[in-house]
Length: 335
Picture 1 (cartoon, rainbow, N blue to C red):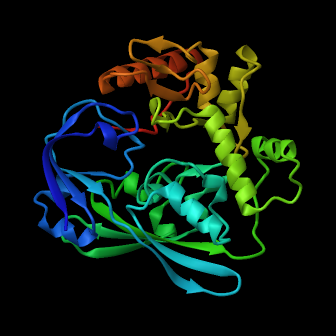
Picture 2 (picture 1 turned 90 degrees about the vertical axis):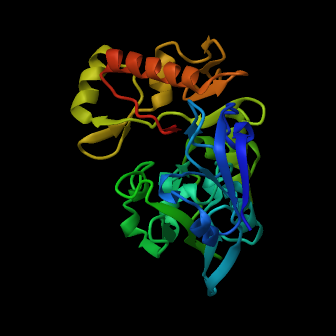
């Protein structure tokens, strides 16, 4: 049975720890309860609150997704297929899978947020993305309440992109996802330098799923602030993808610029490097700023307003645009 609350502070429901109020909040325990909500196609759906920046109080109804359940759908000697309710915590799912020897999620350890948010963002880290293991997304049409199943291909995954951020934005409630994981012959991805270095430091030559997960957790904890201590939403901006012709021109004036080739015509430039190169890293403005260890993370030093954080983000965008002619796109949803 869903719970309803009025004039509720959302401070503990967003990882930035921003104090905003919602006039009407519904705590959803199962997706069928959506049928009882008026104007549900104009609601804000919150999972872990890890990818949202609130800049004002909310008049629209806020749905806090608390649906739970992890189910085995199919299994053989090599693979297992799972169905997971969208309200499950992502990192807890990763640990649950590793404990059972299921491979495929270990590089995405400690990513904050809910399972339902994973396909929306096509979350990823250290060479892995949700699209690599996802088989389908089960969604509820918020107008008709009909169940719709999207295949992996129909989700139109891109870099931190999916159909749920574009054509289907705001039209569906993601109720569950399906994933297919390995039970043996795991294809461990330790090619990212940080993971390799960590494993070497620990004298691990034949890493297990847990070893890779622990390495990722240690690396993330060394670079990213804990939202429970310092409010943040992780990476605030996407790593921009630019034309190789643009990069070649930039290298004339900025030979030290970092980049990673994607194909013959495009390269990815680390947003953190761009921001740090312009002196934003560790800079505090009022109650907000760019984190001292990772320039890509904007933080709430206490009592920050969402508008303060947004204004800082716009200033960073402007300075990167003016210097490098590169547009930094916000990864966080601004409300």
